[in-house]
Image (cartoon, rainbow, N blue to C red; front, side):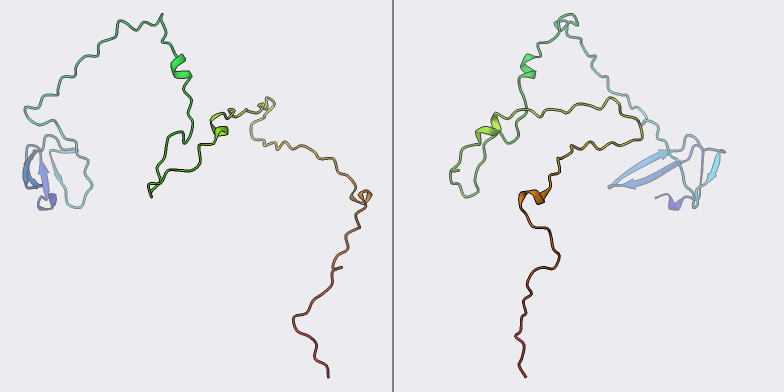
Amino acid sequence: MLRSFACLTKGDVISIKYNEREYELCVLETKPDDAISIIECDMNVDFAPPVGYQEPKRPEKKHDEDVDMDNPLDMSEYLDKTFTAFSGSGNRLDGKKKGLDAAPEAKNSVPHKRGIPNYKHKKGTITFIRTRRNITDNNEEGEKDFEAFSGSGQMLRKKERK
């Protein structure tokens, strides 16, 4: 598009054809001088509004006089609704009715109980809290001591007798 122009000066009108329409652009300002060379250079372009363009008037927002900060909204209807995953109905591709009802335990599930925060946490440290298990001696229960390679071997091919 601009390949046919070697330089631009203030007040030039450039005609550009785009999408079967012809646009005429007027050069209003050039920096750092009144004339610039645009051969193999990067340009920053700002566009002014078209001639005769008026910005549309936006309607003013009217404040609701019914809603007052002293009278808060009733949030109980919003708080009672909780999200339950897959609570809607489904359809099979073959058109048959499904044989099982929805699992009742999913509807009556208890919300996840959060753990106790660590108030002694220091920045830059990671603590892994583990519970200890009581180690009991297996020998007391009557089990044998472990002996490595104590199993019997098996061969795939019988030995040939000579």
